[in-house]
Amino acid sequence: MKWLDGREVAGFIKQRHAGVVRSLPAVPRLAIVRQGTTPATDVFLRVKERYGQDIGVQVETYTEAPEGLLGRIAV
Image (cartoon, rainbow, N blue to C red; front, side):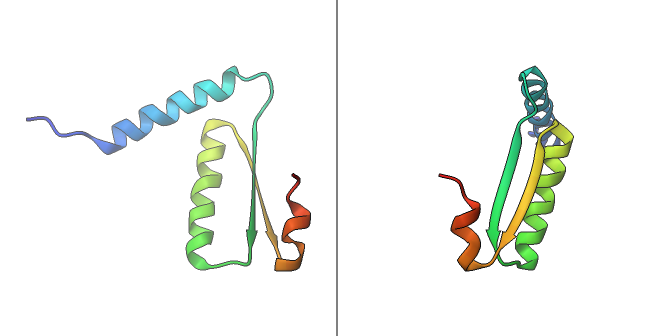
């Protein structure tokens, strides 16, 4: 019986995402808007930023106070 290698699958998915990003006419951008900070959120966002760098997506994180949160989000 052969086991599924999660790292191998994750690498395949990352390569596929990078290929899609390279085929786009412009570099995509992910803007993350959050209210306040927590250690768990900081870790999560570092993972997202690293993944974005690996596949060629610009990732920008904005931390806002509650009263400025809606002003940062364009509808």
